[in-house]
Length: 269
Image (cartoon, rainbow, N blue to C red; front, side):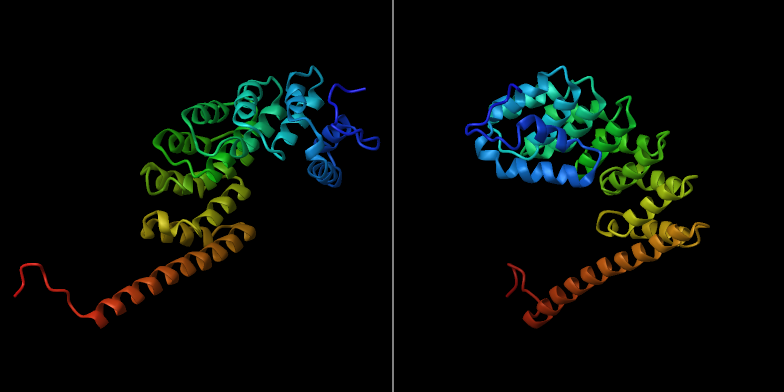
């Protein structure tokens, strides 16, 4: 019998069974585990789930960190999880921990920045990939992380380079080398990376130089890979939509100014 106890006896689903479901290789099993966890969350002791992060059984540690992303934690519990899971020796515990970070923190603290910076250099590409995705989701664009994201565009693993492309587009306004790095990434040998760069360009109009975006999209429309071309046309359409929205907003502002007439200065008679 497992160490975790339910407040009320649940005969058909032990918590250990739920933890196993949460890290199953089958999507339907993982979804089932989440549904059961949510349904029974009021009867599960949070402290006991956290205790599973100390388990020698790695399957339970993985399940526990996934479960933690689905339940409410106190400030003290969050601090405990940050301390324990961020240093776990298992790749998948660190991987799932990355995606739990937004749930564990209401803001990006120096501690979180330190953890993510370490994970961006993790030996496992899965963890590096997850760290870049979390960086993008949390809109972290300071110099340190932008520099790391640009470096990741040269990662040996193409999946990581795809995630890096999306993260770097957020840095185009605050980190000048980002545009050149993305330009180089459009020449990546992997078509999936080129497609990710191109797709990200479509939503980057508000954050970077227009000329650079137009130049990159024009180049990708002529890419030898059909999938990249499709992404390029889609990104161009999105980019034009962004520009149309900005233009429309400016027209409304200018129209309002014209209707009110020129404003006299303070010193005017």
